[in-house]
Image (cartoon, rainbow, N blue to C red):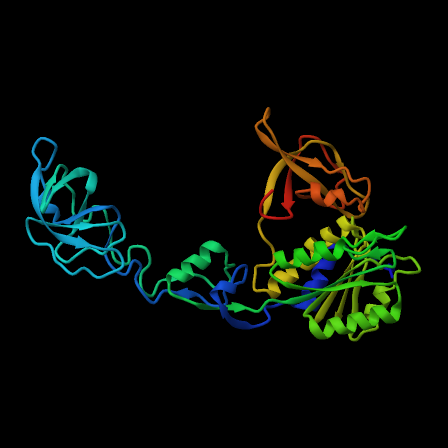
Length: 414
């Protein structure tokens, strides 16, 4: 299948021109189910928050002018009218020379314009001695000071985490319009692969790729559908892919894309329908055999069987597509600048990606990027040790020691 290797840039252009990814539509869901979903419309407040003037301290609601001049040596006396409780409308008003006991979060009663803190007072029965003056609006959070009625609070396209969902709850929204999640079928191929949880026969390995790819799909905003392990048999593979095309918006496979006699994925994908195979082979290291097919409007990304190659090529080529389908921007800006601890070599004529671990160099007071010594792209520990990768262009021979590099992170944290 590798009659012509596309460059990395050509492969990205082919994806953009042929797939033309876009969000899949809008649905309304419960706010409790909205984590990691993407807002489809602006979230606009239909109320002021707070919806009333509220106290920010425990103390006494007063007219500020009644406290002017009060200090430890010359305290002033006010008459306590009663109490204002949190969660209910005040049943009293405050006049000149009066005060009302109030707790944090309770509404300010009519007539009062500030709150003197309880520690600056002494109360005996209904007489309040005030030892400190307050200014107008002191210790008061005003109506609408946090959010105003009609204000856009969250913009369409924003991902929803715990903070954003808390804001939406504050607006009284129990349901929200979000972009639909793309469903992504994930399967591994190969007679040597066994599903985790089953006995491991001699000569076989457990399925790493489908599990790491399913999680990567979820991180990208998609909903993975695990299709299991498919043996190297054309008819079985074809039938599984046909089922996946019915149930999913996109398909990810791993294994069976090189040039060996059992590498049947590209031919099988091409036989499923038009337009068929878009490319098979990209000048990358690792990940050269990566393949893309398009059946109708549904993409099939086929990655190498080596775990590091599969996950890396997913991040490079498939992740931006899934993110766009989920309503997210194509790529996060999860980049970190660091300094190379070792010389990193490129593969001649191929865009090279070196997996690295980020560390703090306390002596030099800087971040450093340490290549993860995998020995081969199939080394499993590379997945756990690497924080991200460094890109070396085709025309660059190496990155030297102490040269500053940009590390593209696998996740937002490391």
